[in-house]
Image (cartoon, rainbow, N blue to C red; front, side):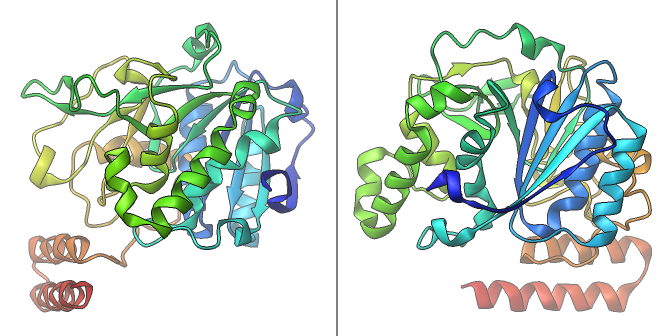
Length: 337
């Protein structure tokens, strides 16, 4: 099933090196409208790791537009890197829940099968992440027979230091996973997760058996299947911060050893209405990337985002536009109910 999930493959190359000679492989699963943040993420990784040969693998739900393709090609001529784009056949995920997130959330289950002949290890990353430091420490990680290394979910205390939110449960965030490809395949992690997701979709009452609501469907499934079987890394490998002004308005700094800053939650740093101080990290690399002329997103899709956008225009003194987005947010919330 997973071996045949790719319907087209495009290797972008300036002959720097073939993907199988990379020091590290990094993969993403995205919908076609997420090429912009992934491009900025790749830029941040390359800027902080100029001494590494990095092969990037982008798994996507459609064809990449010509202009976006040119921007990825620009990365090849600015850095010593390799980029391969995989078009996914979504039919293998028919029937799985995609109400809260896009179907691309399931692409992480395909990745080990597509990389098994060129990579022994693979770093999976969500698109809403930015790299702030070197990846050298990943080469020192010993898997010891486990399939993945992850970071437990946490909140920030009053000093902005990470505190585990689910003590003794080991619940982790699936937005960063360092995968031992052969162990993942041997333990059939993807197959078990998909089977579990189909089970709870067909029989919702069984969610109670596993102790999760399966609102974060792929993440909950991975936590069930990998419970007590994954290595837990330090928070610096996947520093989680919801950049909502309501939740973390006072978080202006993060630890200096942070490798990946993960903007989890509905507010993203590429939104024009995002005022959070930590958005500056994304916007720094945005300005260094081939996407520097791509404007920030101005079309909120969720009612909370519309409320923030209304505040954005209110601060700029554009009152009628602000009222328009307040109205849109009320309509959106009513429709969602």
